Length: 529
Image 1 (cartoon, rainbow, N blue to C red):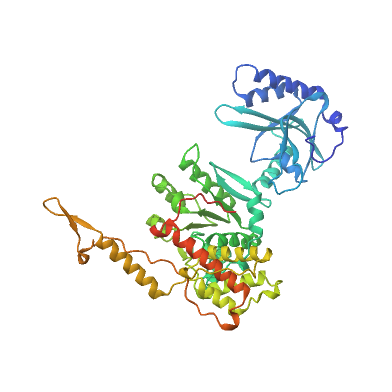
Image 2 (image 1 turned 180 degrees about the vertical axis):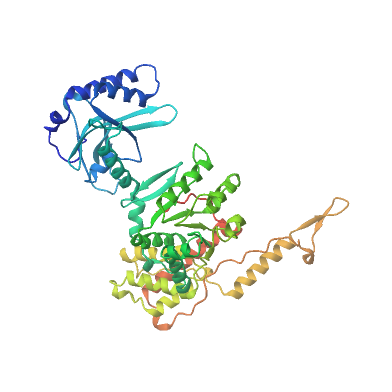
């Protein structure tokens, strides 16, 4: 168990006697049972006594992951299990979700282990040692040992070559995306997998803005020599803003996917919060971005990330007292007005703003056609160009998120065989503009008629209609389903009837939302998935 590469048990004897590993384990246990001092130093002293003929290099994760390097096939690592000279915790991982078949899987965590390690036909001993530290959390050290060469310095050339090769591999992304959360960077495989399914073919935007955005980002990474020729810092910032559900997140994911061919790393910032403080997080974020350049550094909901107490520190990092060459920052926000003007209105920090507005009629038609392609195997639905145009007219002021919900509900009905169910459409939700305007005027007049003022004697009296409060907020016009004429030959189209019912339901949902009253969206923690 805990084996990578070859399972050849004979290497236990060839590389080191089992008693050596047991001796180091006993020394480690003795240390842990006494007064705690410097664990790294104590381990190093034990190794020097037990292996006087070895060069010893102490490596700290995560920068040099020797076992991960071996697991990826670049070396071979075999755990010595003779005489029980190891400490292993057996782990059980349940299925990822209840819908996933299987009983889960077993894994293990090696807290103390001696490995025979082979790289480029060179043999090493590798000690893996893990212990809890009351101040710095769990500590993990790899101690790499190789034979001393007569006349050599205190370092081993072959060990240094292995460290360099493994360190380079460890610093690279392998079907992963860096996500910053809880004060540290984590390589996230799930986000990488989600990005692989994102394509510009799935992004419906104004064609001109879409082409401009793609060209802006890709030309930046293609233009390093131009920036250098004119002594301009090779860095750029973009802000995506607009109402929620209008394509910002899917556009970011499509950018991340399309830039993989240019070997551009993607770094996604989830939160600045950390035990060490916000400044520590910002410093770590830009430190890795500079290391990983060329890279895409993403701050989603940037208005909620950059708080007043770290505003200056963040701007100093953006301005780049250290070089930010090769970094393209993308900040997204639903509320541009809440974003600090020093960020939103200062070129050379965030140079360009792209507004993701509610889709117009043409974009809604394109989105309907996108779903018609998804449903093309259902050829009997009658999903024609004319239906696309009518649905686009019915969905005025719909975001792409609401458009998606419309078609998802329709798809569920189709799968459930409910397209021909006759339902009474609530015509009260389908009002003309004239009716809606009258409703607003009536409610406004009623509100003014009920207002009272207090005169000098303290008596309340009715406020005259013509002296309504000047600062009273105008009543919000209720959402309506546009009164679209359905041609006679489409009156019996089951899909169109189904979509119209769903439009009515969604408009009611949009109209009843408390966020519509204030124009603000609820505060939610967003994660790019």
